Every structure is written in structure tokens, then in C-alpha cells.
Image 1 (cartoon, rainbow, N blue to C red):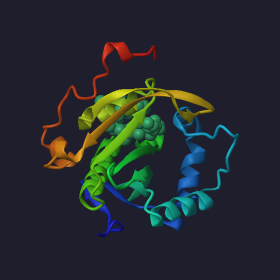
Image 2: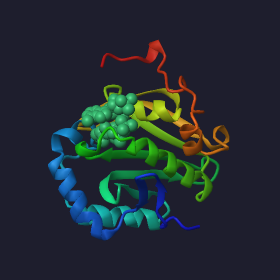
Image 3: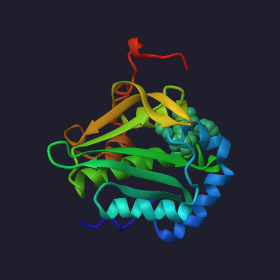
Image 4: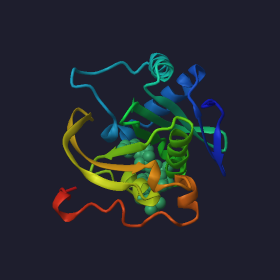
Length: 209
Ligand SMILES: CC(C)(COP(=O)(O)OP(=O)(O)OC[C@H]1O[C@@H](n2cnc3c(N)ncnc32)[C@H](O)[C@@H]1OP(=O)(O)O)[C@@H](O)C(=O)NCCC(=O)NCCS
């Protein structure tokens, strides 16, 4: 099982984060504050360190422990953002969750859906996971487009689920199980086979944006 080899589709690639990415990531995070802040995980215990050297070290430790797969997204070889597979549960769940961001200047080029598709395929094949989940704030239209494009299936509303931008925030949960995508998530999407209505939120769960 080789998770360190980059995966590529057109100009978009994903690869495992490296300790030497810390400086570049920190620069992007600092220069994209207003873009990222509304969607960023925070701690209910107060502000946490912004030291990405420490952050990358922790992510790589989680990778070694089998708890996560911390990836970066690149566009034409340039660092565009992060895609983090976290909360890997083994055994009879075989499930994980994906989180992601790109710098504002890379938005709108289809980087994230391509990277999410490749990362999910990687987890289903190499890691033999069975389920991948993505949780999104109802207000995050751009991120909701990512799951819509890929045909992730709406699963439900989780009240005050994750601490984001300083408070507990409601989230919509979307998921795919490997049985739904025998051809792979990327293949299904690029061949136009992703179901268009899987991510539709039913009226009863719609919150005022
Ligand atoms: C959500 C996010 C990761 C999407 O990544 P992306 O690589 O731009 O994805 P796409 O290119 O598929 O664009 C998705 C949608 O973003 C919107 N979008 C495109 N360009 C944009 C821009 N310059 N500014 C704001 N939104 C834009 C469009 O609605 C687009 O949908 P469309 O392709 O149907 O027009 C990105 O907007 C981001 O990093 N946002 C801040 C962090 C965040 O929200 N993370 C996710 C938390 S769940």
C-alpha cells in the first residue's frame, strides 16, 4: 500500500503533506484569513497555535497512527490547499471524514472536487475504507457545490456538530459508501455519471442561510 505516491488528474494532484510544506501552508493560511475563517475548525477551549510546523508534525503523527491521511492539493505543481482525511475508524465501520480548503486565488477551477474524488478513491482502494463522509455548514454554498458535483448522498442535519469560527455550528452530512461507486468517484464524475440530485437537502432540513 503506497499512499505517498502523488495522484494526478489533469493539472490537479494530491500528495501526502511534507514537513517542508509547513512554511507555504502557513503563508497561505495567513494571507487568506477572511476567506477561510468562517469555515475553519476552532477549539471550544480557546485560541490554538497557528504554528504550521507543529500542525504538520501532528498531522503526520496521525498518519503514522493510522488515524488520518493529510494531503495537500496542488495545481500545476503549485500548493493550492489542504485536503485532510481524518477520524479514520477501522473494523466494522471502516469510515472516515474529509475536510478541505483552497486559497482564494485557486477557487473555481474544480481543484477540490477533483481532489476529493481522488482521495476518496484512494481510501476505498488502498485503505479499504467503506464509507467517506463530508460535513458542511448550510451557509457554505461553494462547499455544497463540491458534494453536489460528485454525487455525495445527503444523510442528515447535525445540530451544533462542529466548533467552527468560534461556536458550535449546524452541519449537513453527506456520504458515499464504496458499493455505490464501483467504477470510482473520479471516473463516475468525469464521465458525467454522478447522480445530480443525491446531495439535495430535503425542505424539512433546510435552515435559513
Ligand atoms: C469550498 C471550496 C473548498 C471549494 O473549492 P474549489 O476548488 O473552488 O471548488 P470548485 O472549483 O468546484 O468550486 C465550487 C463552487 O465555488 C464557487 N466559486 C467559484 N469560484 C469562486 C470564487 N472565486 N469565490 C467564491 N466562490 C467561488 C462556485 O459556486 C463553485 O461552483 P460552480 O463550479 O458550480 O460555479 C473553496 O471555496 C474553499 O476553500 N472555501 C473556503 C474553505 C471552505 O469552505 N472549506 C470547506 C469547509 S466544509
